[in-house]
Length: 183
Image (cartoon, rainbow, N blue to C red; front, side, top):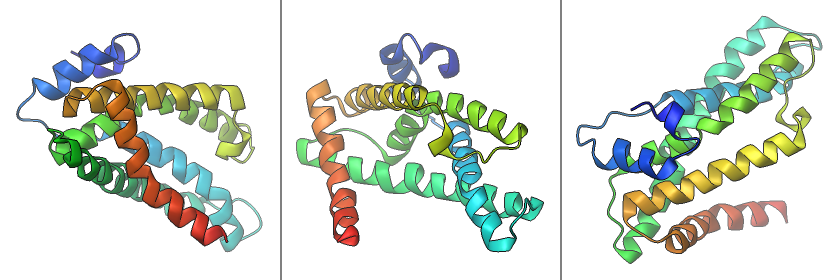
């Protein structure tokens, strides 16, 4: 079963077949790399401004690895770890690798945003995430969040409401630190 095809119309089956029935599970890294490329393209104008006022290929060589590293840090360690930690409160059953793969598979729709960013880059515009179509970005974010809720409910054997509560409580430390930093 190919999760790139089945995640769009039957996400519950995709998560149950791929994550729960696959005991020797490897890391599903390609969607995290895709998000890292998107973050790298988003960072490129800032790094380009540090290096020079015009386009420099070195900025791509610096920004792309930084974006991929940031994506692996956030989606491969911090967020799955927080959700797994909070899920232990309600006796959630998951391993860290399963949680990372849930985050990875639920971020497959973000590949659409990378295609849009590459088109902006090809025509000479700054490929910032702010310049993308707002409606498309919102729909992709909403679809990915729904996939995350479905995946966490499948992997930790929660209802959808408990999975949503698990996600929201695990995001609280990040929100609080952002509010404290802003004041």
